[in-house]
Image (cartoon, rainbow, N blue to C red; front, top):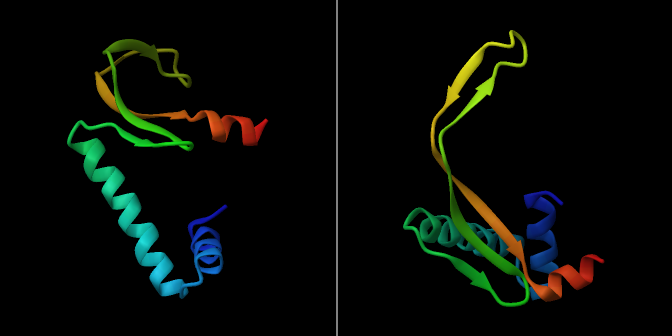
Length: 90
């Protein structure tokens, strides 16, 4: 599902215009991004939890040359689905 399809679905199910639905979707994505960038966890009961994880520095290989490279430490976004979502997908 693309963002445009999500906006159409939200507009149809919510009985609002596509413009209003797009503002709502954008606001939700921005709020989640802001919370995660601040180090917070975002929990949507029944849907899942977004959190920030740490990846330590490690050594890897360039697949083209086989040369060893150093991969720096980084932060990554993690998502753990909630029970309701997991059951729907099964």
